[in-house]
Image (cartoon, rainbow, N blue to C red; front, top):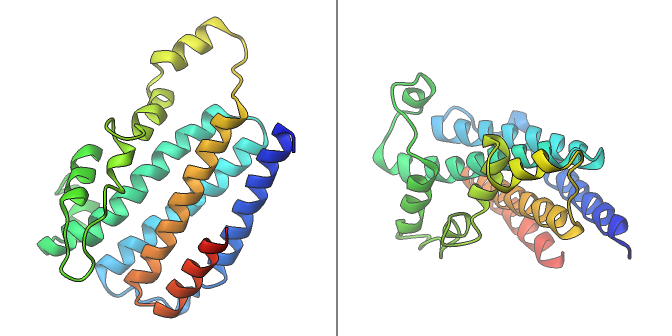
Length: 208
């Protein structure tokens, strides 16, 4: 399998995952009268819009722009978990965030709060969020270089007419986005109390 075939295989696999998950999402049956269920589904929809755009950009060799979306998707992912497991426990009003009466903590403050979370029924996240920070894979910082126009990214564009990426770099971003999508879909089904769907999704992911 050559490099291009590897990327195409990953893109095809991602599209299969998107189709598989969306087959289980029947919007009319979703419980959206609860503010936390509604904000979770809202973030999920936003994430999916960006995810589909990321795939289009990657397919059309606009990978620098695709990485910008990866950063936004990572933020949406963290905010989804933060609302469900941190703000919900505080009894916070979602509309306060929507109206700007309350500001979101920084990305790193949210990941820290999630790492410190330990629920009676669900335990902790076992450093799942720490991996996105400097002490882990530093995904957020790496993606942010593209939105802030600095560091090695700026130097690369300054010195070269065209920027190229290795198959490994492209694969890493695509597989990270795929993993975020899968975890976010599980969170959606969790908030909707869809135990059957969670079981099917978990079983599907084990086979990949």
